[in-house]
Length: 371
Image 1 (tube, rainbow, N blue to C red):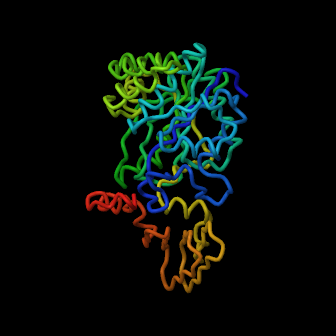
Image 2 (image 1 turned 60 degrees about the horizontal axis):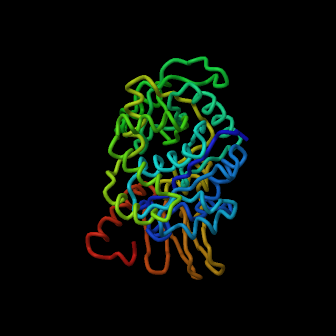
Image 3 (image 1 turned 90 degrees about the vertical axis):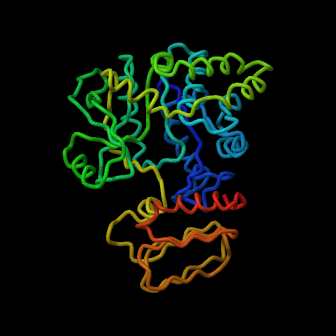
């Protein structure tokens, strides 16, 4: 356990590529998508628990999800839930949590770990985070760069520089630049060069260093968050949130922190190779549940309801249903079937990223009842 490390778990987003399982009222981090018996949020808690005192673990989530988060995480202190009235992107969420932590512990190091990612090698993850905390002692911002396993066009990349020979962080390198999601040919170039890592959106930093970047690059946001933090433990919290929060500019933590810090030579990358996936769509779910390429010769049933049955004939893929029914799949390779009672999705794994377009269409045609 690392004494001065505080974990921030942002638990937001509606996971539109995982519709209709993931909804605004029940987003993907609350679901056991991988068949482990634990939701993605609970798995995140399990990963950080060996590193962080439970009193130092914070969850930032929407007002609508506070009750579910507390139910799933009985070890989470009630005063460690940071409730957002509405989504304002990751800079506001993480910035407010970092400010509240810094007010309690001026020497704190904060680490941001998304609630809806998958990591298969928890021991290696913990080793990498220990290095990241050691590197954060320099006052620079530290991020985890995932070793690419294929040329992904769905992830941003980090261009890495030379090894820094830091005490306690022997693999740490300088980050040269953050790169947006590339096209296929550029992704191949990045992956096979050995100089680029996937950006997993994990940041570890001294809280004071992180807040200094807010003051420098997003002063209006920092001032507004300061007003909220000052009222947090007072009877005025609700009124101040109602007044200030809706006017916050939506900015990602990458834009506020990572990009300007990298341009100034102040970002360190600790390479990570611990089986990371952002569980961004049903293709990811299928890969994580059927990890051996070339052996996906059946249709796997993922069900929360006894009595469901899949009959497959010369098919492969996944079926997710909460209905006690028979689902027959014939002659389809890489199929995704998701049945939630009020909505049915049938898609191919190769088009899993396009599921978000269904959500966009439903929003445009006035169907909030299924979103």
